[in-house]
Image 1 (tube, rainbow, N blue to C red):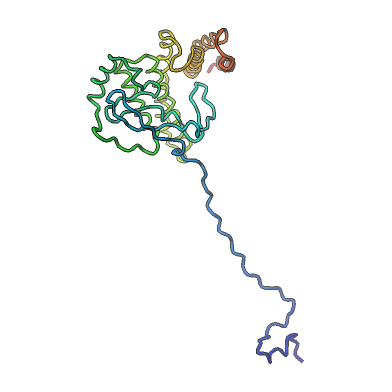
Image 2 (image 1 turned 90 degrees about the vertical axis):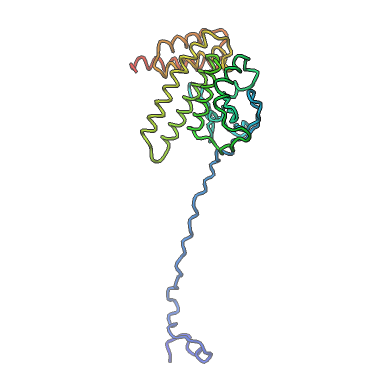
Length: 292
């Protein structure tokens, strides 16, 4: 008698050889490893926060396009102590200059409109900028999708050149220098966040930041004593707080302390700026004690 439990099925044409062990371990097919999908980067692109706006140049009267921030789309995260705004995924400072590609007239957006120009300034700009810097006669080049920090700085430097040619208020020139220093800070931070850090480029960006920062501080200090407020949209207490923070950064502790004291005894300064001044006062005390 056969030991195969399935004997007798041969007559049906079935091959039962090797199938005598009823409870043999079942053969398992190798499990296929599921392919891991590459992680999806859902970080919004800078272009998603920008829009193109058409404006008319008050100097040559030609219409050109410029990049602006979508205020409803960009989310503000706060600000640096010296009021540099910080937004998520985009640096709005890069897009706060209007520059006519036809004649070269350029300014920070708040100073660009024609009503800000006197007849003497128009003449100076025509002779010192427009007559010399005409780039495109009939058609301007397409705008880049975004501005790099270097491209933004170039536009701001052209705005500063225009401001000097038209003999703009000290505050306008100082504010332009301040924004250039903010851009260089942003560039340095971008370089520092890179996987392969370029230490030389970082040092160069920080040096440029400090150079323009000192010019901005000197200019804003002069503007506060020679111009009526508001200055660049800021009331007196805000300008004093800005200067106090700038002086602190530049290690001018005596001047920073004087400005903080002015704010704290002011009858017009708001609670928000006074609270910030108190925080700065604590930082000043600690820095002076530490001999920094």
